[in-house]
Length: 276
Image (cartoon, rainbow, N blue to C red; front, side, top):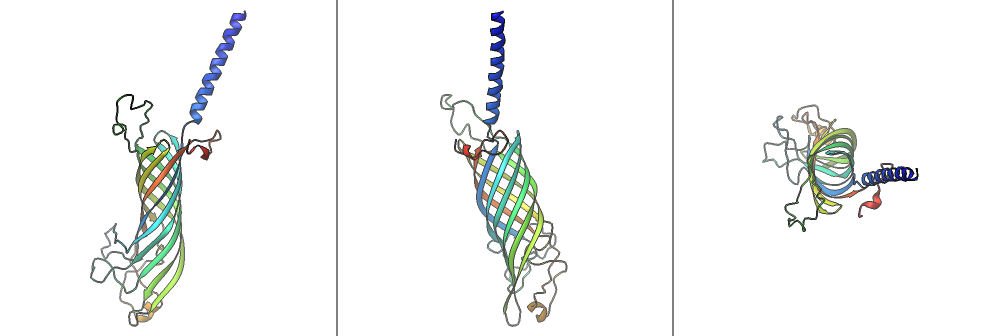
């Protein structure tokens, strides 16, 4: 009788230990990632737009580019599937190209410069999965290069964009400088690709490229809707420029550093484990 009691107690204790071990293993998983980075923007809209309406992508270095800083909190839902929320801040700008570049529109003094903030929510699929090695490669005679991986992912999501900026123009006869302030708010759709490389136990460096399409047409302070045509000096002075029917778009290219850390038992991030 006593032996059976001890056997039962031993089985119960073993089950409890197994459950605790499984639970500890679950909570030791590093499902959260914190990203921070810097990069550049490229604007594609009414200002600096090409004359060819079928041209979908373009970049004019130093004329359609700006800077950005980004932050992101990512969560590994399961396997290759992630969700994340991001915040990007920076500025975008464009100046109409020189007169000799006939493939693009030109107007004296047309330019805009806008600070912006973008809040995004997105889904990611890791098409190149990170390999986790449980053995010590030195004891196996393996090299770090053999164990090298570059996890890569595709993402899609939605967000909200807010900007506040200045639109500039000159009147043709006197070349007087004019400007008007504006602000815009619009939803955005985002698509992109990214990758990262592990440099320490819980640290990565990575890069990301993303395309944003704005559901609206006022990022540059110009609401298109009419084709460009000859205008009188009074129209120019009043800022009544007429632009093509472009949907504003922009791209981000950024480099970042990322930290992995565990979640708490209530599934909230445990920031204390970033370095552990």
